[in-house]
Amino acid sequence: MASLYALMLTFTRPPMKTQFLYPVIVWALAGFITACDDSNSNAPRSASREAAKPTAPSTGHRAQDKKDHKDGDAPAAHDKHGVEGGVSLTEEEARKEGIKTQIVEFRSLATSIQLTASIVANRDRLAHIAPRVSGKLVRVHANLGDRVKAGQVLAHVDSIEIGSANSEYLQAKSTADLAQANRARAERLNAEQIISQKDYLVARSEVERAAAALRAARDRLRVLGVGLPVPGGPASSVYPLTAPFAGTVIVKDAVLGELVQPDKPVFSIADLSTVWIEANLFEKDLARVHPGAKASVAIAAYADQRFSGTLTYISDTVEAESRTVKARIEVPNSQARLKPGMFATAYLDTAATQDAIAVPHDAVVLLDGKASVFVEENGHYVPRAVMPGAGSATELPVLEGLSPGDNVVVAGVYAVKARLLKSQIGEGHSH
Image 1: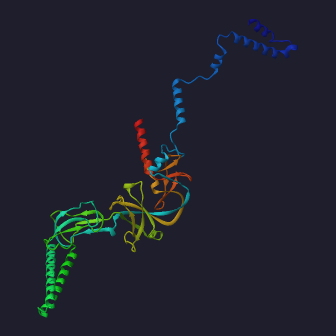
Image 2: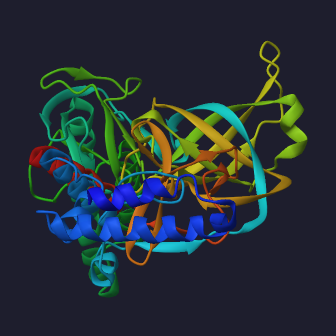
Image 3: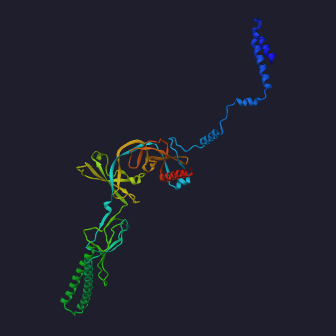
């Protein structure tokens, strides 16, 4: 190798006539030297190539890389708006839960006005029950909150007046029966000319007099609201207080042994299958609504639910102090969720419309304090935060959070919500 380097040095200053060969000779000698170095090296060439590669990360970094890769293969469920979570259901599970979906689009939607309101009993189906005559409560059968049937006995009252009326009826009945028997006997004797004509006419008049007294006694019992006593039995002074129709006992002032009067109701019965929502309508809104318009009601107790109804009455007078008009909305209440005395917010449909993506009120639920809907994609139901606006009595416009073509759950929403919350609780316990 030393001789080779010496040979190279001899060419560092070559004669002018051999200068054009200098680059070629230097390149050839350099290649020869490199080949010799490689053949004499103790490390294999493969090791040199491996050394040229980048250094691998430490074990800790590799584990993290594998975890990141795994997470990347199975990401958490996100919809296109970045909401995490969701549940998957088979078609059979969705059918059993009554889950239905609807593809949303832009369309014309009625607008509504918002009113402060309160819930009252339907006064067309409200009864205050008081005795016809004074007496003492001897038995009380109904309690506050009981649901009673039409004609069901609520209490029994012992009244001297009722006892007297029963006695008069029994006496009148007995007199009438005797007069009928005497007339029949007189007719037989008159046919045989055994009695005088005068006695025969007296017997006939006694029948008419007794019949009139019997009718009067019967009418008195009817006015008192009690049934006819059984002839031959005792003249009872106890009579029942009954429910005029099926409903719920909402007031009970019946105390056993207490005297009751006709001017003081003992029970109040209300049929709460429908209730009235009384609201105050401002003058400026009178031209926008009319009886028969659709309405919906929201209450704090059921924040995720709207109750549909109909505007049935608008007062003809304006209250001088508030400058409002009384309006009444009738709402079905078959499950008795709406209680008289509750405060409510009423929404009345108007003739004006707006173009918007709309969903039913029941499609919107609260999740983590935010209004949300569930969007379905291939059996996966993902919660989507939305911004609802002031819509109609039955639907809400969605200002943000949905796009045309989204498949939104419109029925069975609470079943999906329950499954989602259950899955979140399970994940919390697993961690």
